[in-house]
Length: 216
Image (tube, rainbow, N blue to C red; front, side, top):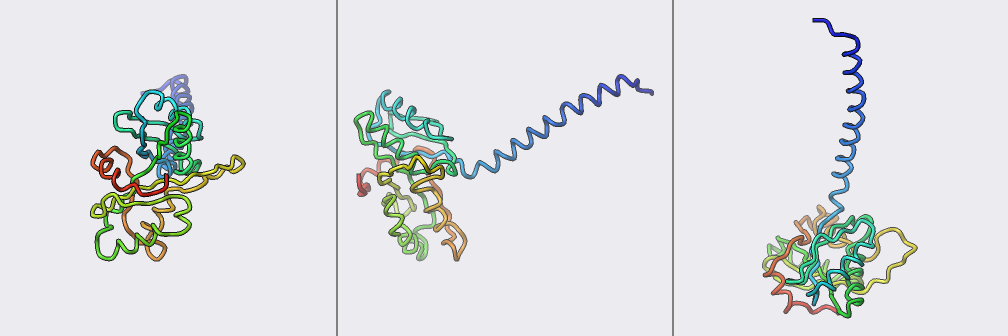
């Protein structure tokens, strides 16, 4: 069977046109995979975010931050889920934006995260993890309080942050300030599994009310 030159030329043209686009798509996918580990979606529990004005205030303020997207705001349970690149803005900057949103609504949202160390209650892990929580530098940025020690659940409340607009790097507390000393392999860390909660947990929310002892 013989192929006509015109047909062969058309096939070559198609391959030439589609080849670069396939390469671009692959590059984009690779870039996304690289970005993912530093782009969490986290749940911030709030106090008193119960109406549409709260939703509007949170969305307007948070989405001014580079890379931040408000995934969900629940007025039934007073929380928000936010996706952001922690290499662009810190956990603290996101929390501070919400605190400012609360002020604009005449409220103190007191945003906090839930940090989980599932192996906390095993062996002498509690003593070692508590020593990290008690770190002087850490406590100038956040206050960590137990929610359920048996399950290794802790609330992370944020101290006020004055953001320097001339600095482009993340400022204040970031996720790695707890994750690295707890989860990095020894001797840099304790080698324990840790994570920040990403979804609503009614049980955690209810138990947190009695556990909040940090500064407001």
